[in-house]
Length: 126
Image 1 (cartoon, rainbow, N blue to C red):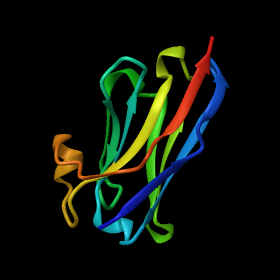
Image 2 (image 1 turned 30 degrees about the horizontal axis):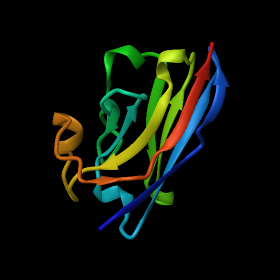
Image 3 (image 1 turned 120 degrees about the vertical axis):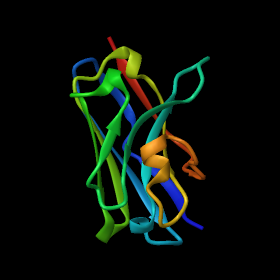
Image 4 (image 1 turned 180 degrees about the vertical axis):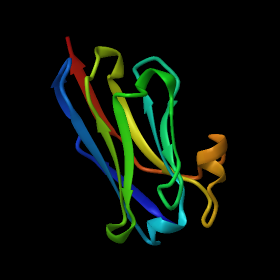
């Protein structure tokens, strides 16, 4: 199975930018659709963005469209989330996740996310 680990979080001012990284180990990331989720204090975890195995299709929650960009580098077993124009409501723990191997189902349907990283904290100050 694939293991995931996020990095790149931290404290940023509103309007600033952060790029999160997710490194995969154990199996090649090219076999998996990848997603980013976040969880704010006292709230449920929510979907942020997803990308298919080839990178040809991306999906975003409405509130981050035009500000966030999900991407991947299959050759280096990495996935990324570039976050621009950050707002205090973007604060939370950000998780990367992968679907089942050899399927884009998780990205297309936002279900069937099987593997998760431990998360990285992003705090946006006003």
